[in-house]
Structure formats: C-alpha cells, structure tokens
Amino acid sequence: MAARRLVLLTMGWLAIAVFPVAAQEAPSAETIIAALARLEAPSDIEVPALRQQAADRVKAKTDPIALKRPPISRELTKLPHIDLDIQFSPDTPVIRPASYRTIARLADALTNPALMSYVFLVVGHMDANGRRDNNLLLSQRRAEAIRDALVTTFKVSAKRVHAVGLGEEQLLDANNPKAAANQQSQIVTLREVEPVTPSGSAKPPDTHAKKSSRKGSK
Amino acid sequence: MVRAFSRAILATIVLASASSASLSAPVETQSFESSTTILAESCGKDIEANCLGVSLDATRLKECLSRNQDVVSAQCRADYSRAFDAISKRISARSAVWKACDRDKQKICAEAQGKPGETMACLLKAPTKSLGWGCNQALGQAGYR
Image 1 (spheres, rainbow over the protein chains, first blue to last red):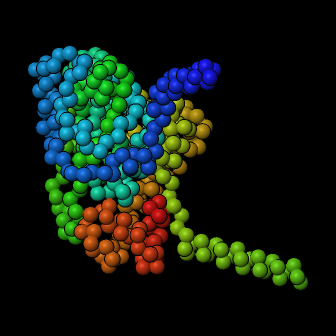
Image 2 (cartoon, helix red, strand yellow):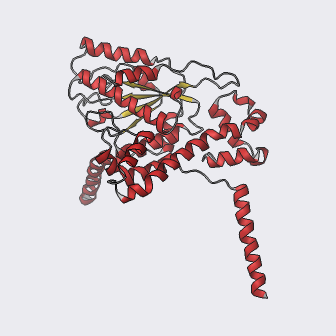
Image 3 (cartoon, helix red, strand yellow):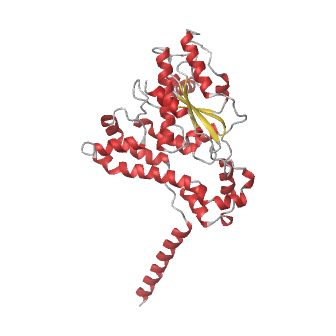
C-alpha cells in the first residue's frame, strides 16, 4: 500500500517535472485550427489603439511593479487564441530555423478552410527582464516577423494577419513575470474577413505594412 | 504464347491504372509543414552560420543559400531548392482552387455569401460527382480533400 502510494507520488512528480518539456512540443496544425476556429462574437479591438495604449503605459511608467501587472486588454484574453513557443535570435526579431516548423504549421492552419474566413492578430510578449521600453519594441518587431513570415513565405493575405507587441504589459504568467512562459507569441482570432463579392476587391490596401517597416528600421 | 498473353494483360493493367491515376486521383502537394521541416533539418545549421539576420523569408533565404553554395552542407545543397519549390507549389495549389472551382461555387454555394471558409466547406461537402473535374483536381492538389 505504502509502496503503491510512493509510486503514485513519484509519478506525480515526474509528470510535473516532465510537463514543461512536453509543453514545448509545437502544436499540430489541427490543434491550432481547433483553438482558433471558435469565434463567438467578433471583437472591436483596434490594433493601432492597442499599440498606442501599450506605448502610453510604458512611457508614463504606470504599474511599475511587474508582479500582477494588469493586462492592457482583457478583451484580448477572451478571444480564441493559441500560445506558440517561437525561438528568435537573442535580442533580434530573427526567427530561428528551430521554429520554422511551428510557423509552417501555423500557415497550414491559417490557409485551411476552417480558418479561411478569419482575421488574426499576432501578439508579441516578453518577460519582465530588461528594460520595459526595449521589451515593448522587441515584442512588436517579433510579432511583425511572424506576420511577415506568414505573408512573404507562405502568402497568407496581409489583410488577414495583423501584428502587435505588448512587451511585458500583458504578462501571460502575471504571477511569475520573469518566467520564460511570458515570451510566447500568441495568435488571436479577431473577426471575420469581408465577404468576397465579384466586384469587391477594390478595397484600399492596409497601411499597416508601411507603419511596421518604419518602426522596424529604427 | 501464354507468357506473351499474360504480359499483355499486365501491360494493360499497368496502363489502365496509370491513366486512371492521372485522370481521377490528383497528387496532393506537400504541406507547408513537411517542406519547411526539410528546409530546417537540412539547412538549419547552415542558415545560422551563414545567413545572419535573415528570418524566415523564402526569397532572402534562397538568395543567401545560393550565394553560399560553396560552404553550405551537401545535404542542404541537395535539398533547399526542392524545399522552396514545394512551398511554392502548395501556395499555387491553394490559390488555384478559387479559379478552378469558380463555376461550381456559383452553381452550388450561393448560400455561403462570399465567405471563403463557408464556400470551401460547401464545395468539400458536395458530392464529388456534382463538381467539375478541374475543381476536384484542384481541391485534391491543395490538400483540402
């Protein structure tokens, strides 16, 4: 009996010890689809406004202590989303080859019929190590790098993928601001695309790309 | 005599299966995951060593790897063009569906009201027989069926 309890206990500890490693295994395209497909109500989140809110908060040094810092947008946390572990070269927005597969799975998912009708937001996050303003900038550039990879390499429509960096302003693990889990990149389902009408392709191109390249060249 | 006869039968079977394969079974293009995994596995180290600052960008990666042909590993040299070609083929196959299924879509998927996901779901739900040959081929090549 005691031996059995010991075995169970050991198994429990093993599960706890092994889980973080297992969690790093990239989700399959099917898992991504299942996580992103259920949009109950479209969000009215405006991406430029969100970016501005984060910038304003960092500039004003609001909520200086990272522990339990409130998120910039609670609405964002309620939308369908998936957290992806994407590796970048240190202090750069360069996606490392070890993460190509994860981005490719995301591209497979976004071009699958189940997700074709949706617009997505790539959200970059950082842990609370280093300077707050640097983290905000780097997370923005990393989110843009993911968006750019989807758009340039896999030709996902630029109209369907937006990018925003929230630095350490929307901690994924607010109780452990310095934990690596806070560095994950999030993909969020925002709303449905505009229906395609036979003559309806004459929409103005989104100006988002211009803004991002200006920021990126800083 | 018997041998010649059986050879003829065999040839007929081979021919028939080959032609029916080309007529009915479209060849699915590789998923982005599988072609990109080949790229990362064969060229990951070469990219990190020779393509500093290059992110996942097919055009820039291709340019960097071809510029460094002399120093990249034999495995990478052998695989990278094929991997990028496979990515392009999947992109073409997925975008070709819309044109290939345009008439079918108008005929049977008006209820989807121009929403791409719903339209595609409608096409995939429709019996194969009710869709044109080109549309069926395109759906298969895109990996949607």
